[in-house]
Length: 173
Image 1 (cartoon, rainbow, N blue to C red):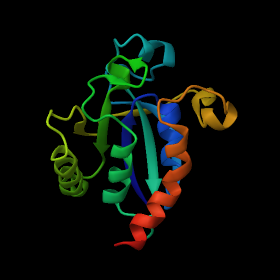
Image 2 (cartoon, one colour; image 1 turned 60 degrees about the vertical axis):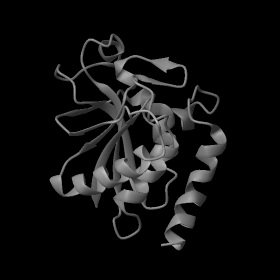
Image 3 (cartoon, rainbow, N blue to C red; image 1 turned 180 degrees about the vertical axis):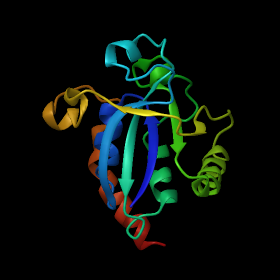
Image 4 (cartoon, helix red, strand yellow; image 1 turned 180 degrees about the horizontal axis):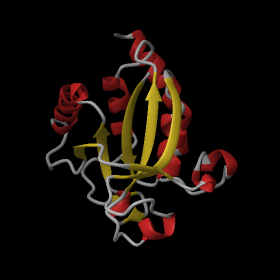
């Protein structure tokens, strides 16, 4: 079981998207790489804590590689947008890839370079080691399953297709 942390704007949609990927075993939303211990949503919402809304992802490396997870992640965000995804803006909505082992860094950097080559403007996705992560309050966990009409910055059609996209990409390897 491997682990990676992805910030992709509002964590409700990012979690719903990521958990559909074939090979992802578990997801949890929370707050990553900030400066205060045990932050609450209300504290993070002020943009004064330094945290990003983030999804902790556990995946089975025998079923899916980190490179494919990241390629699919980049499809769900605007990687050139600084501190904004969809209608959400603020530093808590920044995009980021937070790793727990330096062995993942070369894969992350390669996928980043591949995506970067597709744009004329610099990417705004930060790549950092995970410094800390605190699980969000229970009502945020699996929010879009509990509230199917809830707000999501990721197109619902893309969320519906991501499992198919992940299976198709693996078949073409």
